[in-house]
Length: 315
Ligand code: GH3
Ligand code: MG
Ligand code: MG
Ligand code: MG
Ligand code: MG
Image (cartoon, rainbow, N blue to C red; front, side):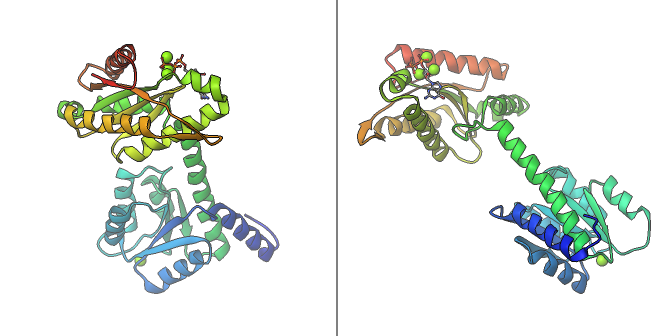
């Protein structure tokens, strides 16, 4: 960010930041009790493609974070009534890790250890007042860029490239975490293994690309069908796994049967020709000793569903 020609580097910075922010809808929260300082920060940041929201102190900041959640960065003053910048940083870090929600401490007070203290409490960066517009943009864009990159890496590590569904890696981490839950929560969790019937024939008859497109459409149907607390993953090939939480066996059967019938009813258009596919489902309550055991039990049920003619659900 250091340059001899201030204007040129500022333009360059702005163009970098704009490229980063374009189509990303990032929101920054400015937490500052002094009206004039807050308005300066807001004015600087709003000039970019950033949504800026304002809080007058740490308490209000925590309330806003609680209510709307999707905030991508916090810029916070130190000295504020109710909850100061240090305490705000400490509390935010209890629920939001550094690489998900960057915090930048801002203060004009002359103590040298303020920056260190902010960093030790979990802030990602620090700006001394008075600061230049250029420094503000440098720090904001660098910190946002890192979280955007980490987020994209996380996406590619946990998502399946073809369908966009969660992949095996995420499934197993989700499953292991499930086994840290209470017995009651586990008992209210259902695991379903799903396999597309005679999928090889689709590839043989229409080609691999059409097969891929049908996999994508079926994946979209699965995603549209589960709720936020549930999880759907591509286990591999044409096999999927759905985890339903807060449910009982009867309700899960009803929901999975609805899904099975909707897939069977759906016509996939291939060059104007209607193609039908069906799925077989094996389901199991998460009561076994480990996630692996539960998976195996669901897989066994799936095998039964296949053996008994396919396009059906077995427990
Ligand atoms: P069953 O009813 O017993 O499950 O029959 P099936 O033909 O679906 O089972 P099989 O396991 O023999 O074949 C699975 C097929 O799925 C074979 C494989 O080529 C296809 N497949 C797996 N992954 C993909 C993929 O990413 N894209 C496409 N187009 N096909 C895939
Ligand atoms: Mg203050
Ligand atoms: Mg299979
Ligand atoms: Mg098979
Ligand atoms: Mg199959």
